[in-house]
Image (cartoon, rainbow, N blue to C red; front, side, top):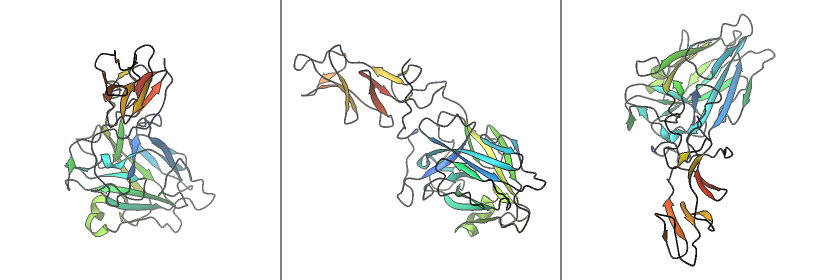
Amino acid sequence: MFPRIALLLAALVAVTFAAESGAQPYVGIIPESSTRCPVGSQHIYISMDDEDNNNTSSVSGWTGNISHYSTGTTFGFCKVDGTNFRSHASRDYVVLRLSTSCPSGSVDFFRVFDNEHNGNNNWSNGDISPNTTGPPTKLNFCFFPAGVGQTMSAFPNFYVPYGVFTAPAPNWFASGYVFTDDEDNNNKDYTYSTSLNTYSSRFAGIIYGTPNPLTTKNTYLLTAKVANDTCNVNPCPLMGSYDGANCWFGQPPTGTSAFIYANNFYYTPISGNQCPRPGSWYDGANCFVTAIHPQATSFIWSNMWYVAPVCRP
């Protein structure tokens, strides 16, 4: 078996549209477990020390990699390219913001969770910016209102099961909720957005306090599994065949050297200008084999052509 080489895919699905600010937008999706992030994406943790006294924090139903411990809540996310996401045709949803801006078609909200004031044990792992663990914890979100602009009827296929924040619906594979019992003493929970007047009630249908959704202590976050595991079908849909670790495309004739140039697979010719591999041809300098899929991450290993898989079963 060849060594496992985790290389970032330039994109996992052919859905691209620019963020309003022009910056690359990244978002956090909820993986089913900490080991099921898409190949090349970063797994991060944000853990909140909720109210210590008579803590009632809980999780129920499908919450993926979000869990409750004795006095707190730990959120696990995978950092993925936000340009893969659009407004859903029929359902509002929310993802964690992990860059300076939200993807086009979504609206920036944030929720402040007033955590335990005494001996607080908030922590995080990985690059969680622009979110902060304070205390208090400030989580930034991108809210996608349903049916606005370019829409999608199904969520992007990252080849792994994952979820987002959204209200229960027949569309989803499973649903659940997270409840955080926030600080009782002089609590300062609140939700803010420059678009509060337009989308506040709809955002608060997914992430909210009680009884006042925007300002009351304690927080509900509705979760749903929106994509299933498709990795076992084919880890190499872009090109090549899975060898148990990566997508093997082939090797050049004996005595020649495989290489990559201008996002194409090549090998060196023999006897001046001969290219004996079937389907290859002499381009005046070397032997052209094929163009590499624009979404694939390619590499040479042991004089063979490879691309990284989109997932690892």
